[in-house]
Image (cartoon, rainbow, N blue to C red; front, side):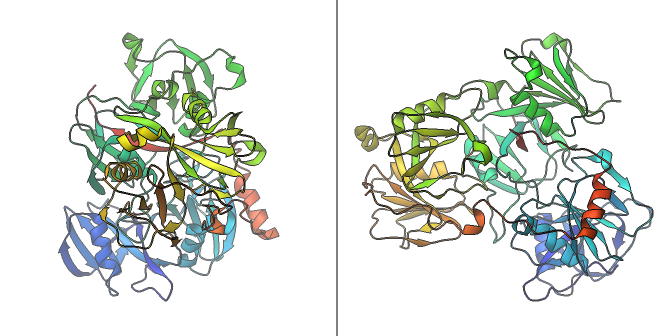
Length: 595
């Protein structure tokens, strides 16, 4: 096969492709590795390695691969290719290959590519180049054309079809789908008593809130972001497992049984129970809903036809029929009517009760804000990110934001002149970044542990944040792979801690007993000043001054040629697809607890 490369040229990096129509060739070297990603790392470092197979922790590096024999392999086979991109994720494989297949209806851009390598690079760089995330790609080697899609085959299996005429390679982008872009937000789905089989990529000790936070920020131990798509947490042992896979049918992973004690979730989430339905309480049935994500969105934001007083308490989604059912009751209230569905249907039931209850801070913590001076989160086109406007003071805005239900307020922009604030459902934890805005301060909500010194000051704002900035000094203490909330609590409980550096990529937390002078720009670190010990001096300086310009809104879109537009029209004309306004971008959470 000609789609593998043993060595990459200057500026390129190795990427791995999961193969389904190939067999192992000549074995170059054997090794025993704990994880698949360790095997691909060995191949990356060996210029003679063209591909790898992995089975029962045995890693075989190959100097060649062969055509398919028509039988399913017992092993995982990954071929090595090259791509030039800063968005290559830390994952065992970056693309999933399916030859002579196409996805109909989601083509967004057509780019010219003389090689598969250039096509892979175009897909990985699509957000920077065109302003959208490339979920999958179709490469036509004869025409040197590369078609970038906004969805993948896992989202729309009904539109994943054979291509009988043209020579084409379809690839899922495994680096996509692990983060959300405004106006979408990350929402987690819980599956009780289950965990993913053989997908234990990153394991650490953390409480449930920290485990979720580390997945959302895509904690990584390498130079590339880890595309965390799910996490598993055991509340008895506090074992936190981060994975780059989702469970079927939204992903490739299989669920297996895993018991642990019952626990209460404070962060809003859906709870998924596969192949179960609630009989007799379907209040609203919608047909032709193309994805489970859009179905859940209809529950959090019911359409006007359901009436002003309707409260969606649970959902059922039939995948093959694309049918979305909004229920007025839950399985907890009507357990006798919660029954299995027949095997001829693929259906999931989702509870949303946790999302509809007001939240409270975990025991031992109180509500506080973190301030980003002279900065504001973008409020979206037509102010779509704003839930409502309020006023009077920072404390008043914080209380109003926290008490909002069922909508979830995550942050607010505060006008220092008028004392008005805009309550926002978005925050700056993932892809949305605050911008410089004189006279406006951004406040994020955090539940932090109370300390004696801060309690005496009675200040609702505990820390001041300086984005993409690092305090350049030797820390008095440091901790690895720590969630932000834990890092700030460690500072608050230390006898003398005037500030912390927090690395968003790897979770490194550095504490400083004394802070003097200014910091300097940093790609992955934010500095937090402890306002319990250090007074904020008001100035015109913006704490968002170091945010890279390319991360701010208003990404320019390139023009598409007439030929490319024509091909896009032909492919897209076979399906109509509608985006809803207050869309929820879902990632999966597997919360291990007893029934």
